Image 1 (cartoon, rainbow, N blue to C red):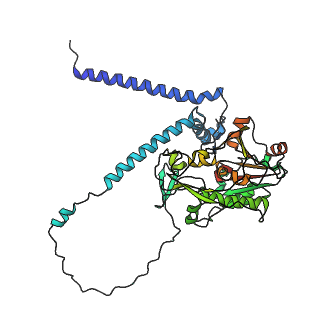
Image 2: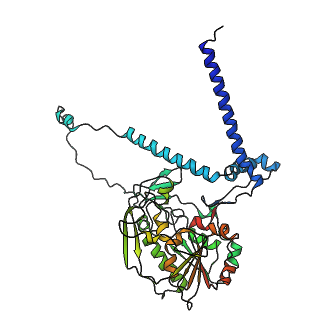
Image 3: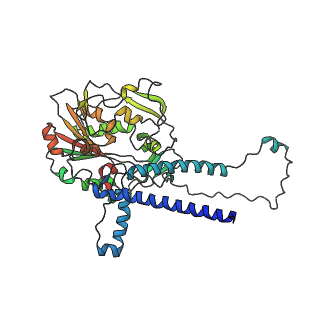
Length: 437
């Protein structure tokens, strides 16, 4: 008895469904396994990459289950506490961005009108214009209200997070209200116990400044209420045009002009208006397009600016990275306009100014001067050397790496007592001072 072709097809479809079902079930078990491994390991509390607090696995209560709170928190905890969740999210983001880039190019090609050869236009018969039906009327001058020159359109670039401002080429993150953040990056109890002069320098980035209304959130005043200090100052700007003078095109960091302005403000805050400041001896522009962190992380080759730095005449010093004497950063790689790291996505900011470590110490060998403590993240890299030139030893601690390196959280009071430090300054922007609630 022969088997019909249709029955063979049905049999193959049945096997395909079974194999597909087995693969799906296996993937589900893998995901559950990655999540339930939390039973044998410590739950993560903070995502350094995303700069936010992570959802803990909730305790079950009938009240929370009835209101739906338990289900929501459980769903969020699966994404946050799953093993390798950070790497998985990053991989998915990279794939999504590549897909977005490919589809946007296809969409552009489909929408671009077909060009008509000029020869065809020249050979087309001329069409006589129709005579006017009515005599021309006297034109009336109508005054049209011009739009506000400070009205900007945020054009989405990547996954609801990154935006271009109009056609400026500058990529930013949309601003959020400071009330959405919990300012506990630096333990409030630890800060309150510091008996030495303590200062805060706030950086107004697009994460806290809406360019259509720069006074909308006033994050600086809100943060001052949350973090009592001896003194404060901030990097501010009065327009988007001024912002472009101070920050990179595709990076969240300040550029050479922005970091130098910050240095002058920080030193006046710490030492008064009469402090003798370093003056640039020149500028150096390297013959490369600088794709900043927004471009690197999302595979966007959209930058147009070159990497420029100020040059200074600074006395010799020693640097210690995590207690080992070594060169901080790779400035020695920047030999000339043409001889420097040439990769498309080279992190010139990190390589030139120095990357992020738990502890960096500058020693200028001037025991007659004070010692200083700086608490901050990558924003401090560009000003560390300039500020340190005013002191004997300057210690820079990064909370993101300190606990992993030294096994404990930063205790500024004890650290300052141990290292004979007389004052501390915190340098940061909205998301390096607080975590999203």
